[in-house]
Length: 104
Image 1 (cartoon, rainbow, N blue to C red):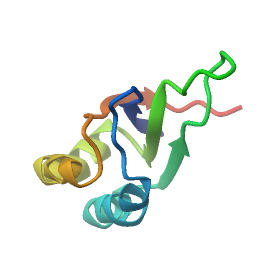
Image 2 (image 1 turned 180 degrees about the horizontal axis):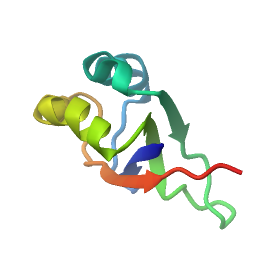
Image 3 (image 1 turned 180 degrees about the vertical axis):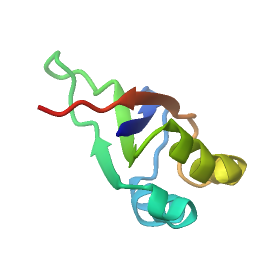
Image 4 (image 1 turned 90 degrees about the horizontal axis):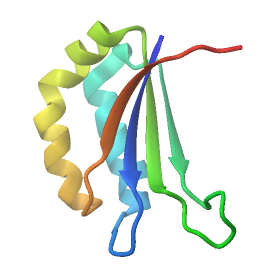
């Protein structure tokens, strides 16, 4: 199992429409990638390790897939479409990381 994390850096001038991202963008992604998507979570940054300091990421989407090939095969054909929707919810691009998921 792999986890695809799309992390949106936080900052002074960052704009991020959480409602749009949660109610429109993520359901659209889920619909387009179909059954290849095994799970989806949204983390919303609330704090940092330093009291009073903003979280380093305003939002992190966590998408679960069986393997890299299933992610690439289902997500890849729609990547440009997903990227084009960015203007509807943020002025900052997400940083994508693919990780092997190990549970204990």
